[in-house]
Length: 267
Image (cartoon, rainbow, N blue to C red; front, side, top):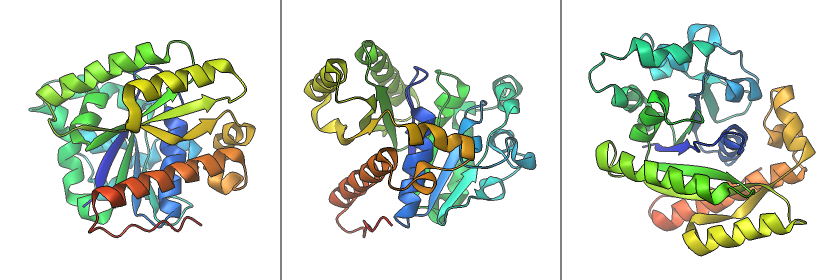
């Protein structure tokens, strides 16, 4: 059965989409059957993986409307083991169109149930707001991965998100967990990055990944070529850091589920 992980932060510009693309691609490189769902109407994850925005009608908007199944929406990427459900600007209308839907916060959860056995991991790129779409993603998820930019207001925004997650657990999904906190745009040369890291590790200890995502030119260039950084420039610092994140994540999964075989061979 697939584990569903939402990549979420209510604050924009923290590397959420970059993480969804490159973490998902790194899991696929480890031969994990991976599905990335672009659940943001900006469709940046879709473009960053080289797919057409809108997906010619096979997209997350049509999925939540119930017009297609998750199996029909999922499209092949250029990476083995990786499929994608693309997004479209039409997704902004979903909240209004589904306002009278019964238990509308669970639409995505119900839509994914038929394909749970088809994947090892399902990654959801959430919009940068606590919207109907984000609530659906969190209601469907087993856990949340939180990218945090190394800046002055990082902890303040993280505190707000933690409060939101606690509310989601109380109302919609009592089993929702924090998968981990990922430091993004990390610059070891600055004292600010180190201060943010120290504060996060003090408050959240083992939940903060050892892997850190740096500011990296190749990582920033990759989406314009429609590629994850591991296929755009495998040797770049950005690529190696996301591969490290995937290895760290898979090691934690193996530790948590000793009877489940986990392949660490990231090629």
